[in-house]
Length: 577
Image (cartoon, helix red, strand yellow):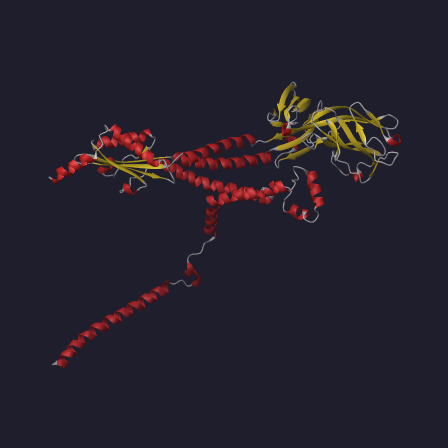
């Protein structure tokens, strides 16, 4: 019996165990074959999909138009402008750039290939500039769309648990739910909150929930700021492409007419031709400069007045006189004439050995310090060999034991010329040179009979003879000269306007707070509960005060009948009964 029992017991067990095991094995085999069939033939594709050309373009566009990239490009543009202030720039001062290249023959050619002597026109600087513009445009357009959509949309619905928000206040009022809800809407409306309107499909209880939001001008200011920065960049580019500037030194009583050959230095924009320079004439009638003579210490000798009077002739219009100063330029034919500097120009007459005038002109001397100790040269090409005088002009002559003749005051108290003379070829090989220097390599210094170099000290009205019968030199009087900058910059006013817009945007960004306020009215048998919560975007230290003010305004509007703790205790006792 026991054996039969065992067989009867084992047989079903065996059948029950073998059959499921076999079915399970078949299922595993089918799953394995199905998985194997789903494997890609190219095992390299197991790691995920590969980006195609369009995918890489989209990825690059997202990276380029991110705010992080825009900030990086802005910093990179500032760093790229540093070489422009370290190395001399060819468009600004070609002579100084040439001297720097001659003094540094090893490094200068490499720096020139990299565009270090014309940084702002180099391809790499323009690339950074263009990438920054594209990045800003790519940042602004999507954000503007989102902002417009957010302004047109309603404030979001209130969350279920207001007590979980950063600022939460709750109280009870002896008023109906409708009165409390209406008072909440009025209180929020007075503070210019946008209030959510009841939408279709919302429950009946939503009429006692008020959602409000304000502070959209913060994002508006952010967009305005970035648009203004883009506008400033474009304005600067327009000014560089279509603008030009010329510098010229004009002496009192002298007239100059605009043109490519009239300026001492002329820089044209890439899209400007010499024919685009407007034609007009300017005569410097008078230059009035006054210095502080009564003060002591650092204020002694400081300029107190720097003004000029000029006569301007535009086309066929009658000539007109204008006054201008350092911060008050002349505006003529779309250009601005700025008064940059001033100095002295002694009127010198040079005669040869036969007493024939071979040179007579006002010679410009450049100030070297605050007391207008000036340096300059006089080039006389009317004699053979040529004569050259090198030295300085001192408006108030004084003698120092260490440095010799110098000036004690920038005003014309005791003016004098201190010169030494050379003879020879002033222009060897016909090379161009500065009007403020003489190359003395091919010249000999004039000597006195005792073998000492000729030293000339001339005051106004004096005439000194040159050695060996070479003639004489006379200083008749002293006039002033003014350094003028004539500039046409079509991007100047737009850049100023965009700068004001950027300032407005910055004020909105820093002064406006983005806030959301939710009010939930809780109907009750004996009183109405009200919960107010505030949700800031970022840090907002004034949000708690705002919520308290709204709560106080609602309490006042409903009659000031706020539930006191004693009333709540009485209600609880009544409920217990």
